[in-house]
Image (tube, rainbow over all chains, first blue to last red; front, side, top):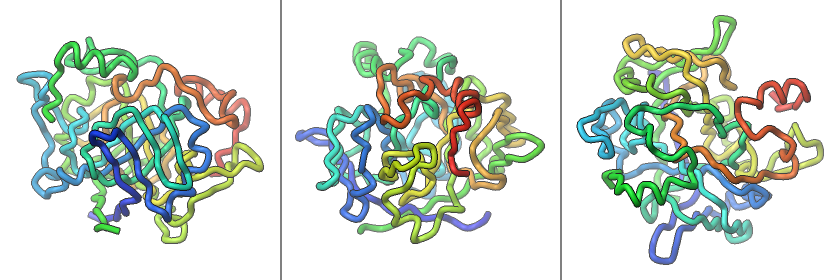
Length: 160
Length: 160
């Protein structure tokens, strides 16, 4: 194995009764310039609660939303993986460059989770027209916008 | 600043005259189990050629495809960023769990780039119906499938 690389946290995710905010450290705030020209962004965070040697060696997991089904960690979105990088595509409600604040409607991260990157949502990179998914997800919605209500109405268990 | 986190390379990306392959190290191959049930995956790689202290402190860049326009690195997909994580959504042509090989039609990484994660493309997480983008990208296609031909026909300059 060649060398490791290091991730520098660049801010924190706030997810509490006050809402969902991305807070960017002062040194990186200028990097938000013009992000408000996009409707959505990919928010990258480090799953620090799963940054444990045993979990980072785990290759298969049980899927909480598909009882009795196991899958490789590269075939599901579990936070248990060799490098606990998580990415959440979020609508951008407000971008405050000077104060380093990005307001989003919701994000599936714990309060205080380290932020590691932000990229604008680009259809040419991210938006797939023709797709198929594993049998356990075949009845799930085709759009991110419809996911929250569907998971709520069908009580889909994400185990967290 | 709180502590740093470590990225462990889990394989390599091959991008040469033989094609585009993701090679997964032996310890992580089982994690590919059932990935072949998906049409697409997000391939995460480390932009090791841009892993330099000065580039990781750079917050603004010139956009090669939009002459005279500068943007924050969080408002574009430049490989210059505080943590040089890159993600490419790829169609999956073949998944070989035993040998740790994933064949894709194309990926915008150099030959030998370190692989750091793979996630299945999930519409509920990744597929945004209603979006808008910055003015410089407003005429670009709405779908990843249409991007390659468009960029070729319009000779869009990504500076690499």
